[in-house]
Length: 145
Image (cartoon, rainbow, N blue to C red):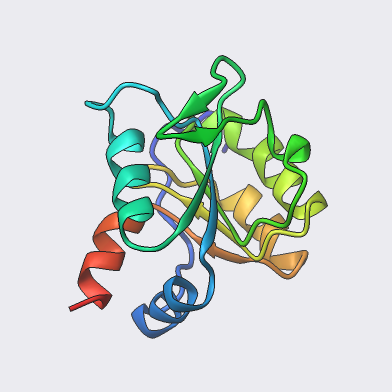
Protein backbone atom coordinates (compact mmCIF):
# COMPACT_ATOMS: atom_id res chain seq x y z
CA UNK A 1 0.00 0.00 0.00
CA UNK A 2 1.87 3.05 -1.17
CA UNK A 3 1.36 6.51 0.22
CA UNK A 4 1.29 5.30 3.80
CA UNK A 5 2.88 7.99 5.88
CA UNK A 6 3.91 5.86 8.84
CA UNK A 7 5.43 2.55 7.85
CA UNK A 8 6.90 0.31 10.51
CA UNK A 9 10.31 -1.21 9.76
CA UNK A 10 9.88 -4.83 8.67
CA UNK A 11 13.44 -5.49 9.71
CA UNK A 12 16.23 -3.70 11.56
CA UNK A 13 19.63 -5.13 12.46
CA UNK A 14 20.07 -6.23 16.09
CA UNK A 15 21.83 -3.75 18.38
CA UNK A 16 25.11 -5.70 18.17
CA UNK A 17 25.09 -5.20 14.39
CA UNK A 18 24.29 -1.49 14.80
CA UNK A 19 27.23 -1.21 17.20
CA UNK A 20 29.49 -2.85 14.58
CA UNK A 21 28.23 -0.44 11.89
CA UNK A 22 28.97 2.55 14.12
CA UNK A 23 32.44 1.27 15.01
CA UNK A 24 33.44 0.23 11.51
CA UNK A 25 32.09 2.98 9.28
CA UNK A 26 33.24 6.53 9.90
CA UNK A 27 32.39 8.41 6.69
CA UNK A 28 28.78 9.56 6.83
CA UNK A 29 26.93 11.45 4.09
CA UNK A 30 24.00 13.31 5.63
CA UNK A 31 21.29 13.78 3.02
CA UNK A 32 19.04 16.71 3.81
CA UNK A 33 21.47 18.27 6.30
CA UNK A 34 20.15 21.65 7.38
CA UNK A 35 22.47 24.62 7.95
CA UNK A 36 20.18 25.68 10.85
CA UNK A 37 21.66 24.71 14.24
CA UNK A 38 18.22 24.09 15.76
CA UNK A 39 17.34 21.35 13.24
CA UNK A 40 17.80 17.69 14.19
CA UNK A 41 19.93 16.96 11.12
CA UNK A 42 22.36 19.72 12.16
CA UNK A 43 22.55 18.50 15.77
CA UNK A 44 23.16 14.92 14.64
CA UNK A 45 25.85 15.98 12.15
CA UNK A 46 27.63 18.10 14.75
CA UNK A 47 27.50 15.25 17.24
CA UNK A 48 28.95 12.79 14.72
CA UNK A 49 31.68 15.23 13.73
CA UNK A 50 32.53 15.82 17.41
CA UNK A 51 32.76 12.05 17.91
CA UNK A 52 35.29 11.23 15.23
CA UNK A 53 33.12 10.77 12.15
CA UNK A 54 33.80 12.41 8.81
CA UNK A 55 30.52 14.07 7.91
CA UNK A 56 29.68 14.88 4.32
CA UNK A 57 26.76 17.30 3.94
CA UNK A 58 24.36 16.68 1.06
CA UNK A 59 22.10 19.65 0.39
CA UNK A 60 21.82 21.24 -3.08
CA UNK A 61 21.05 24.67 -1.61
CA UNK A 62 24.24 24.99 0.45
CA UNK A 63 27.96 25.41 -0.23
CA UNK A 64 29.20 24.47 3.25
CA UNK A 65 27.71 23.22 6.54
CA UNK A 66 29.62 22.75 9.81
CA UNK A 67 32.84 23.69 8.02
CA UNK A 68 32.45 20.84 5.50
CA UNK A 69 31.99 21.19 1.75
CA UNK A 70 28.39 20.52 0.82
CA UNK A 71 27.46 18.38 -2.19
CA UNK A 72 24.25 18.69 -4.24
CA UNK A 73 23.70 14.90 -4.25
CA UNK A 74 25.42 11.64 -3.38
CA UNK A 75 26.76 11.08 -6.90
CA UNK A 76 28.66 14.39 -6.74
CA UNK A 77 30.82 13.20 -3.82
CA UNK A 78 34.27 12.35 -5.24
CA UNK A 79 35.21 9.74 -2.60
CA UNK A 80 33.68 6.66 -1.01
CA UNK A 81 30.91 6.98 1.54
CA UNK A 82 30.26 4.35 4.21
CA UNK A 83 26.91 5.42 5.64
CA UNK A 84 24.15 7.44 3.98
CA UNK A 85 22.10 9.05 6.75
CA UNK A 86 18.75 10.25 5.39
CA UNK A 87 16.84 13.28 6.69
CA UNK A 88 14.26 13.53 3.90
CA UNK A 89 10.54 12.92 3.49
CA UNK A 90 9.62 9.25 2.92
CA UNK A 91 8.77 9.85 -0.73
CA UNK A 92 12.31 11.18 -1.31
CA UNK A 93 13.92 8.03 0.11
CA UNK A 94 13.82 5.65 -2.93
CA UNK A 95 15.99 7.85 -5.19
CA UNK A 96 18.44 8.40 -2.32
CA UNK A 97 18.63 4.63 -1.84
CA UNK A 98 19.22 4.17 -5.59
CA UNK A 99 22.09 6.67 -5.40
CA UNK A 100 23.45 4.97 -2.26
CA UNK A 101 23.59 1.69 -4.16
CA UNK A 102 25.20 3.27 -7.22
CA UNK A 103 27.99 4.99 -5.21
CA UNK A 104 28.82 1.80 -3.33
CA UNK A 105 27.76 2.90 0.15
CA UNK A 106 27.79 0.20 2.83
CA UNK A 107 24.84 1.36 4.93
CA UNK A 108 21.59 3.26 4.41
CA UNK A 109 20.36 4.82 7.64
CA UNK A 110 16.85 6.31 7.78
CA UNK A 111 16.53 8.65 10.73
CA UNK A 112 14.01 8.49 13.55
CA UNK A 113 10.49 8.53 12.13
CA UNK A 114 11.63 7.45 8.66
CA UNK A 115 10.87 4.05 7.21
CA UNK A 116 10.60 2.88 3.63
CA UNK A 117 10.42 -0.92 3.50
CA UNK A 118 10.40 -1.19 -0.29
CA UNK A 119 13.54 0.96 -0.63
CA UNK A 120 15.10 -0.95 2.29
CA UNK A 121 14.49 -4.28 0.55
CA UNK A 122 16.12 -2.94 -2.60
CA UNK A 123 19.17 -1.73 -0.64
CA UNK A 124 19.53 -5.06 1.18
CA UNK A 125 19.24 -6.96 -2.11
CA UNK A 126 22.15 -4.83 -3.37
CA UNK A 127 24.21 -5.84 -0.32
CA UNK A 128 23.80 -2.77 1.88
CA UNK A 129 22.97 -2.78 5.56
CA UNK A 130 19.79 -0.86 6.36
CA UNK A 131 18.75 0.81 9.61
CA UNK A 132 15.31 2.44 9.72
CA UNK A 133 13.49 4.65 12.15
CA UNK A 134 16.47 5.11 14.47
CA UNK A 135 18.58 8.14 15.26
CA UNK A 136 22.26 7.52 14.56
CA UNK A 137 23.18 9.94 17.38
CA UNK A 138 21.03 8.12 19.96
CA UNK A 139 22.31 4.74 18.80
CA UNK A 140 25.91 5.97 19.05
CA UNK A 141 25.29 7.35 22.54
CA UNK A 142 23.86 3.96 23.55
CA UNK A 143 26.81 1.93 22.24
CA UNK A 144 29.52 4.40 23.23
CA UNK A 145 28.81 3.93 26.94
